[in-house]
Image 1 (cartoon, rainbow, N blue to C red):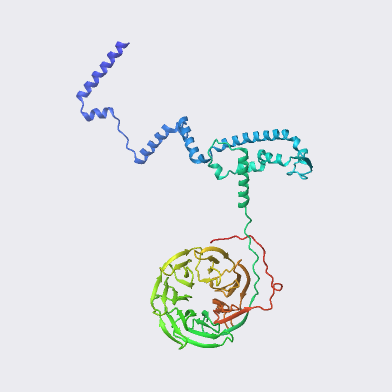
Image 2: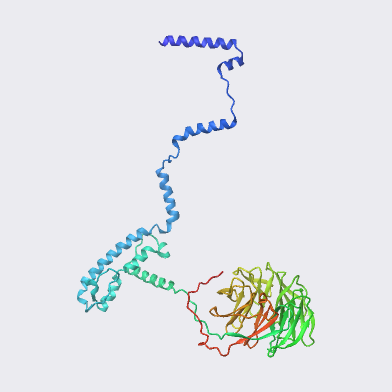
Amino acid sequence: VTSGAGAWCSTVLRVVFWLRGNMSQREWSYSFVEDVQKHSVHTLVFRSLKRTHDMFVADNAKPVEIDDESHKIKMAIKQQTEYGPVLHMPMQKEIREKGQHSVGDNYETYSAMHGHESDYAVTGTHPYPSGPGVALTADTQIQRMPSESAAQSLALALPASQSRLDAQRTAAGVGEVYKHPGIPEPPGLSLTAMEAGGAKNSALAKKAPTMPKPQWHPPWKLYRVISGHLGWVRCIAVEPGNQWFVTGSADRTIKIWDLAAGKLKLSLTGHISTVRGVIVSARSPYLFSCGEDKQVKCWDLEYNKVIRHYHGHLSAVYGLDLHPTIDVLVTCSRDSTARIWDVRTKASVHTLTGHTNAVATVRCQAAEPQIITGSHDTTIRLWDMVAGKTRVTLTNHKKSVRAVVLHPRQYTFASGSPDNIKQWKFPDGSFIQNLSGHNAIINTLAVNSDGVLVSGADNGTMHLWDWRTGYNFQRVHAAVQPGSLDSESGIFSCTFDQSESRLITAEADKTIKVYKEDDTATEETHPVSWKPEIIKRKRF
């Protein structure tokens, strides 16, 4: 068979070689290769995908075999990385439990040894079970009390209470987490540590802060309405002698009024737009004013004339204040700056830049920080006056800060914004508390030495607060002047007089309203409706 097959193969080969020698290359290739049918690229790709799918379909979703050695290395690294600080704790727990069993044995041994030292027995020391469903037993009804010397030795051998052990098991202290594993503690030392931990926990579990009882303040009542301006009354200031006060208005005039009688004494004209700020100097017979005409003027009240102009602001000037101890004037403007002026030379000492929107209010004080500004960019800045730079920026408010007031006796201040009123502590602007509830655009704040804080809003409402506790003890919404629209109810400025017995407000109905304390009110007729609610101290 083998020889016949070999002869057949050799015959076939001869025929192939003969054909190859007598045919051209093209004929040879066509005779053995079929014509390939031409397909589109889409069909070819689809067929390729199908072939690939058929090839790997058997292994689809089959899990990769786990290499034991690789798995062990991975788990060891994961343990060390994620649970390294507490890996020793199970070992410590076993050692501790062993120690407790030995302490329990010591206690039994101790009881057997010192039984003769028991001086007396007390019956019924635990008249109630230790928990629901726990019956009184002979052990809890009668306890043998050891003598003093025996008690001292017993204290060292007593095991820790079960509740403490449970607490310690469930919540390990930070110190315990970082102890070295495998080092047992003596029972006495462990108990001492537990006692210390218990004291620390009890100190940490403080009572929730509650509002202290607010000081009682008599309510304030309206007793005088002064008319005379022909536009919104935008600003107000009382002179240091408490004889008269001055107002600035949208009618472009400054008017001086007798405080006791409420009569007009003098009108000053010179501004060509709304007067936004006035202040009277305590060191010289000068009145300073600023307005939306970009002008800052110094008036000599002996001649009732302007004697100085302070040029530099690029837009409306919204407020001004005098430094209490040196001849310096500070103004704030819609151009996002505040400027420090030398009163006598009219020179601009510093331009305080940093705010990113109009600066609405500025206040000065003798102590550091000497200048405080509030802006429509929602921030309050405390300034270093000597360097002309920001010391602190307070960003807690969410909306424009239009009013800032300094407490006359405490080293604190308050700021007003539509979100709420916030109290702060100097020199670093530490947050004290929020006074929430006056849900309006707060244009002005005033505070007196008795701790009465007044906030006046754009909708004509006025809230009176106890400064210390933040308790809102009165809300006032005075009627507008007859003939005015209800929409003209708005308070732009308010201030206490020098005696702090009168509160003067400048309003949008073109009037000046004067309030005083109600002399007939007592704590019985107007009690403080105060409940010691838990304070939710919000920082923002």
